[in-house]
Image 1: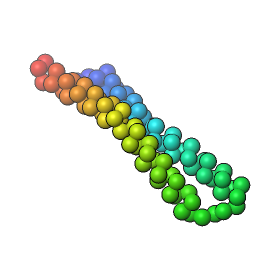
Image 2: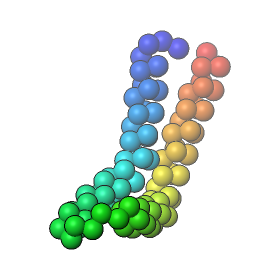
Image 3: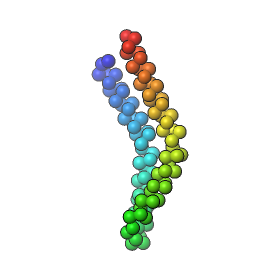
Image 4: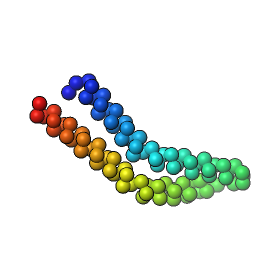
Length: 90
């Protein structure tokens, strides 16, 4: 295993990490900004007002994006295992 292989594995892992975690983080960011805007306009500073909708939307987002996330992780793991097996044969 040389430096190019290590860099490729690191690059792939970062891309998979962004692909798996990114959509949920974006959903959380958007809902957080919207709730903060609503709290600012209405001047209601209740902690549960921010927590409950964000929890619900993140849960729904997780349920909707879970097949894509699992597919990305399985594809990455299969590629990584194939790469490990190919190093054992050389």
